[in-house]
Picture (tube, rainbow, N blue to C red):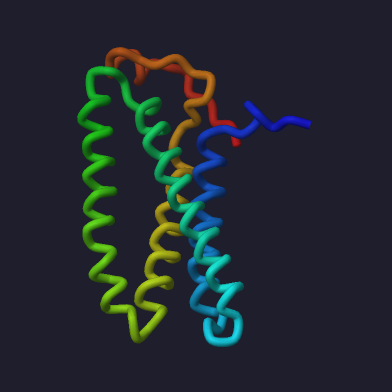
Length: 144
């Protein structure tokens, strides 16, 4: 049974964001001294889920905005991602003694931000708009 083409952008983004958030918070709960292998596995699942979330987010941003503002929208999303990447080493440095300050903050922030995707329209199967007027006049259907 193949699932290719059955998942849409919105549910995929929500699922991977929740998966990353839950497993990141799970890194705090698991005792690293006794279950070091399990904690590394949970960290890897959280990391790969976050990377997949960011990849889907860039594709979703491309499809969400009309051509006239697409470059600006993708640039703003990219800047937000780079800002998060620049600030994360400082948060990790602060959280060396307290895991809640690193894994907990990462987990809560990605899960919370992932929840906002519910309010966005689904873009799978839709044509890309060229102007803002076309985008505003489209019949938007929510599928999830």
